[in-house]
Image (spheres, rainbow, N blue to C red):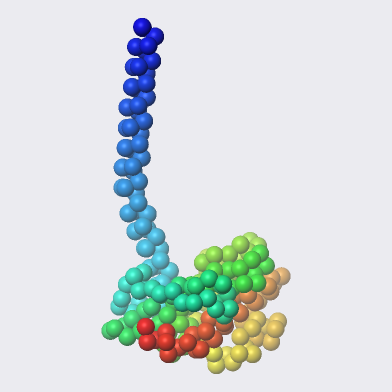
Length: 205
């Protein structure tokens, strides 16, 4: 009888402990979930403000999005997300979440901001697995190379110029690492071509 009573007491204690633990975990999740979401949004806004001057838009970019059909120019077989910047209600720029295939260690994720006139206001590499000290110089934290796309467009330079210098273009490559900058230049060039091809529908959103 004493053994059965002891088992019951231990079982009850374990049950209470399990309930309290589950409740604590649920409470922590509820408390931190919104904080995590807020931090993600803050990081997005900071990235947007790096590539798109704040005076070009007055809307909440995190809430002004759309999905566009898959297109080889955007480097993916899946639909791509765009962020639509507006000024006084009119579309002033589009930020593309696009892919640059062909990096040394795989594809690179890009954010490319293009204003309504087809001019790049900024570009950032947001995901990459390139070799440290070589290909990873496309990252703004490693070098200023990515700033070379600012104020560029199709026509500045012409399409032939939209290559690294080794291929006859105007963009620098890195010593010992041509593949990665070549992929990024191609990705930005293709994004611009896509914008110009679909400009009317994009600006009519």
